[in-house]
Image (cartoon, rainbow, N blue to C red):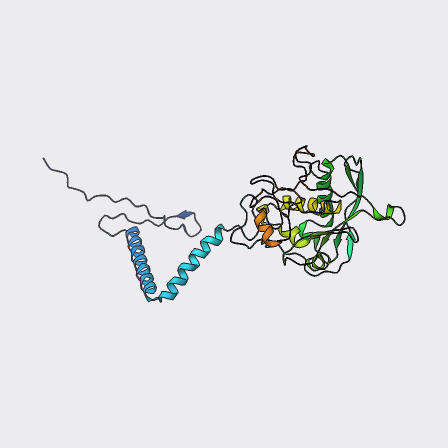
Amino acid sequence: MNQPTPQPPRWERFDIPAPVRSNGGHGHHRSPEPRTGGRVQRWQLVALAVVVVVTLLVFVSALSADSESPDQQQAASTATQDGAQDENSRGEGPVPGEGYQGEFATGELPPGGPYAEKGSDKYQVVGQPSPKVGEGRKDHYTYVVEVEDTVDASRSGGGDAFAAMVDATLSNPKSWIGDKDISFEHVDESALPEGEEPDLRIQLTSTETTHDVCGFTYRLETSCNMPIGNRVVINDARWMRGALPFDGDLGSYRQYVINHEVGHGIGYAAHQGCRADGALAPVMMQQTLSLNNGVLHDINPEGTYGQGDATCRANPWPYPTGGPEPDTETENGIRNDS
């Protein structure tokens, strides 16, 4: 019996189909390509070329790296590390709950946005009058809100936003109106009786004017109350940057600085110290600078700052629980309401 003649193996092709070509305007066809088992396939040639190119690139890269000086290699390594760090960086500003990165001196202004340095001591009224807040059984305080004309209030939402923050803070039951004897009212000065001025002028102020009005004894950015002119001077540097003890919580710091300086304005003249380690700080403590009695004593050895080296927790409110309690009624000091 005749045996069938053995056939060569059949190779399958998986290359890209040949481009479609015109057939003289009479339809389209693909040019036939023979399938042969003994010829080197096109995909094999492409793969071989790729391997050769990659090998050459690796070889050239190795030669280039060997030719770099140690200084160049170190610079490249440093740049890579810096790049990785920058990619994960949150920027200069504070992150609530995470605080600030790096080391800072006591009372130093934190990193953050720009603020007004140049002053004019000329002010524009901002915000709108609002109804009385608090019972005011004994003392009723009127106030206006102003922004110095060299302060770019748009950086923090505008002048009306500053006034709204003042209004919201002073109308909070945890603020001074927690004391039933006190009330506040944001007034239109022009509507006051002739010759009468508001009890408080709450002013967002440049650092230059702040230094002129408040002094610059500590060489640190602070705010103040100036009885002459009934001025509650809020330093724009602190309004924009806050304070390190507040660990990046700018909103709480703004509430604090309003309550603290208004507290001076309504008769709480003396600063207070931390009563116990881990307790909430009295609002009349100089929380802008530190929450630690010892640190505050180092800044101002003439001050009285309570027990030893106690460290409190940041607190923006005179009455965190909503009003004076029998055992904490004098925590903010003694008010001279005359």
